[in-house]
Image 1 (cartoon, rainbow, N blue to C red):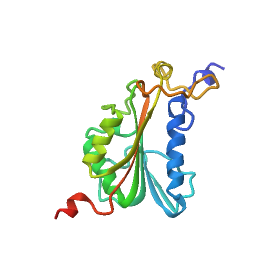
Image 2: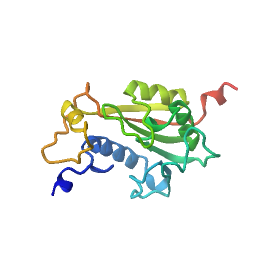
Image 3: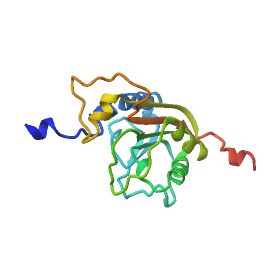
Image 4: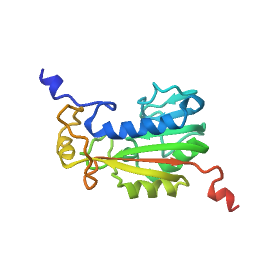
Length: 195
């Protein structure tokens, strides 16, 4: 009983991810996944969508800071990864390079969440910070968002609880637990346009 009640939530049912997951899934649905190739960096959360083609990567398979030659995709999903890379600016450039011109990039990161090394935990980003990192890599940020509350911050101090009926999803903007951004790679990159 204790293991069931005090268990950590997973990527799909953690209280701190419910609103973010809904927003990301709605955004991905709007991209018409049936005609898109997708790569999910270090996860399989969206493997169930009707992608034309789908490539999952696991932690360690793809080093965002020192990638090999990368195949481009219509949709690049990078959830809860940037906080663990040594150089998030280089990693954002890799996300840009993974994306076809005109394609979409979805990034999420924790903010007011305890340190969780796997094996390292280096960074936290506000909406403005995440926007700067992605724009610095040549991506166009269409939208940023965050979700959290004082109760959610307290609830995530010792573990990552799953959503329970008594957990509120009301957002308190000054206490974001998670941050996410929807961006796209321009059809013509700015550096290529000036050459």
